[in-house]
Figure 1 (cartoon, rainbow, N blue to C red):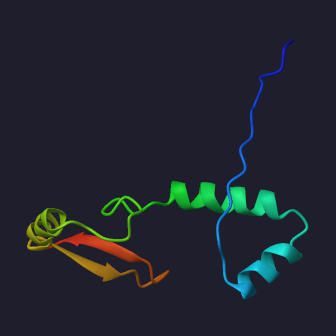
Figure 2: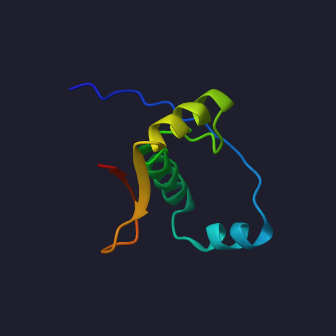
Length: 86
């Protein structure tokens, strides 16, 4: 059975000295970083899609939505939840 050829690319990025020290102390920093990026991609904000900001049009749509919904804190886990106003 022939194995798939998975080419790998190296990506570099800058971090502050404290984070660099921490990453260098990990037994397998590449695996840690890969997993962190994959997890972040799985948990991307559905509103901003990971950009960290929304356009004015997106804000307008959200504000219209929030006229009939509210953002509350879950009493069990403290996560933000969206509830319909009835």
